[in-house]
Image 1 (cartoon, rainbow, N blue to C red):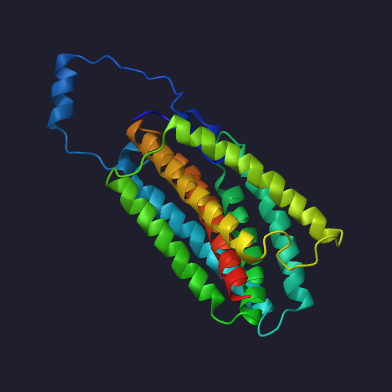
Image 2: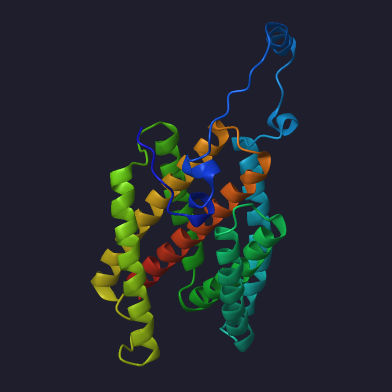
Length: 270
């Protein structure tokens, strides 16, 4: 399998996940080797090494914090959108952006900063979900189920070796990401200046649905890159603390996937 760098800065900036860590081969005597063979197998927590199980636990912990604040944000916009809900959404997005960037470009994971990201992101996503739910009843459940389905299928295909990250696919993905970011920025500017009055800007109608499907495919491939980075971390015997980097990376991608699916369903129902 050709190694591919992850698109998520949480993984790409760290040599543990990007495959650039130098391999070290310790020397050991014959007696020492026999002693190691005689010992019972150590658990990842005892060796202080990253493992899939520990990364899953950390991811669940992050989402627990995320869901608590998301409920607060969601209720602030129910049954009708409120000024408080708008404030929580804006404040949550600003806080999530700030802590997200800090965590993404830190070489060493910071647990408090990662949890702060989860808390602020929960407020923002909860508030915007409440706004959508107030207008299109049942849309949040639909988006959540769709997110779980895409995540589950992608994970199953990756675990079975059906899909893998590759250098060529990753290059195409990165080009598409840059194009999408430029398009999104242009769309926001046109909406803020009143040039486009549709609630979804340029992403309305069938064009919005087509763009949404393409972006969901991009988010699914981003999940593949995240899984691949975590797999490399475990196989290389990365320190256990980097499980937090894996959890943070997965959360950012899943939140992105959820927002895109929420937007697609809203455009369709609109």
